[in-house]
Length: 619
Image 1 (cartoon, one colour):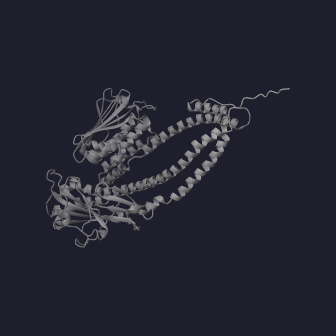
Image 2: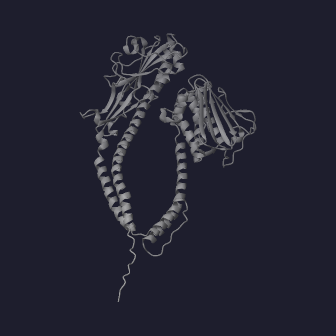
Image 3: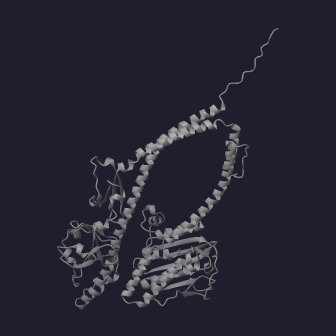
């Protein structure tokens, strides 16, 4: 019997799917993890260095701002005397006898006393007068001066005492309102002090600034540079203040290494005004002290990742590609935004758990999207409240100072008006905690502020309002007008009479306010600095505050714009959408034409001129 052998077809030889997954895993997972671990270690160390440098830079900026604030405070005291027209007028008078005594006791000494009390720093003031009809008044000896004992007080000398002083002879040529010098003179160096030097000039002759006096304000270096503490940036560090010639004025901490400057990170910041340089020298050991910990941490993470990924790859390789495809299809649906797609598996294995997890994830993502949306809305409202809370305290300080001055000189009527207007201003500022108020309330608050300024400055300032009555019941973010009126008085006005004009009208579906002044104006560069503080601006906070609040509430297409030319004036344009306010607008008294802001003081021309269709007065 013959037997036939049947040869079965040989099964194709191929690499199993699980091995393919493992090989792919080894190539595309393990190798990148090792590379990522290596580069992450380097990048993490670099990140630590950058973060440390950033922290030190931020601390240095805070120290610089503190020093600049104190320098500006001393300069402000000198400006109170430099720009005091009444004082300059009295210093030009050469009448002797009783007139000389009266000028000294009734004008000169009170003004010096007010200036000394206008700062919290302990200053010693020396005033040298060209007018020799005024008597010298001093404590101690001119030759053997003792500024420490003179702190909080002043000495008055004749200018002839300085004629042979080298630092006085070398004092730079006068530029009105700008020339002042910080320098250690007389015995300042021995007593660890420094002085602000400034001329007093006759401002009635702007083309020939005649010197009528000289001012020296001496302050302790330790008090001026109190913020310089090397411990703020780390042990072993050093902080220096150096003048323009490279001479060290103050030093905190010390460099103990003898290896040279290569072992130190040097960061410098220039102070506005005197041209001084703030320098920080930080040992590199501060930046590298955590390197070993970071190295071990990254190594441990990489090893753990390798172990976890290896076991995960072995586990995943056992699954069938069809199930993986189903999972991918659901994930793709989620990625495309279809969060309603669900996956169902029978049984109690891992894929059924993945299916259940994916289904729950889709539901959770929907909920999270809604929560994130609500959170962003709440964050936006919180930012609005934060910006609104940043009201400049200098206005309250200056007003209280004016109230004190009125009380001192017995001007009770003006004192009462100013107190009432200040109370009205802050009552309107609170606005029962509301962020959005009607425009008529905003105008009433601006009116209260203007009444305060009118009481302070008299005929030197004037205001005109031209407001379309149709916008009075519309809504606005509170405190959008007052900061610009205040800005015009503080920065656009330098003694000559100034006129400020406020226009309010609608342009389509947009409310527009214009604040126009005929002050000194500003350059294009200065305008850019106001909106971009990183360019070096030392002010403009109130303007940026209003701009940010409007944009946060109404959108980036609204806000504040400025137009200015030096010597001509400045125009500020404020735009926001015309939205009716939710509350019922109070009835307004019927009137037409021009209605003056309520006040018994008629010395200032301040009017609200209603545009056509006038419905009443704002007062």
